[in-house]
Image (cartoon, rainbow, N blue to C red; front, top):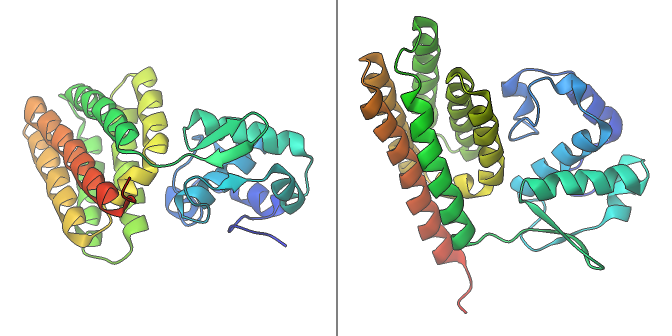
Length: 252
């Protein structure tokens, strides 16, 4: 019997042929590779586990059992073990000797560290877009409008996915491939915190206003104002996530 919302290997292989972000995010909050058809078996398994973690099927601190996953996917424990190592690099799983793999707990310390890095790099990323093309601005404008429509919806997951997709679109357009790779990695590491930050409609509306300010500044060619809007977007998310995490964390 399959557990934790995981799919069978044939289903994973089918997903690997789907290149649309909108379709992928129905089961995968974010893509590990731009070309999904080139995924290895451990990468495919890692994506299924990652989706289960960020969708809440595995709780922070919960053990992930290799033998159960291997049986679920119909593979040996080798690919599962490698998948868990991939997720350890994304900081969502920790493999402890003699104790196995566990979902990493959420912490204010990690949250602050991740979002501090994201804020600095996101600002630098946007400053590289001072000569944004007409095509990029058109695409950005359409996506910002989509976020504004989605902000009041009850589907928080869709807004989070669209917001991260927009951020990564800017990363790919900034002209620095290494920076884009780092931003992608940070997005995966901080996904659960971003979900916290955008849990309620009020915060999503505030996020959409920041995206609008960024777009308007870029449209006017004001890269510093655009970068400031992006930095505010990240900082507002950090503050919102910290507040909610402190409210929900058990007292010491």
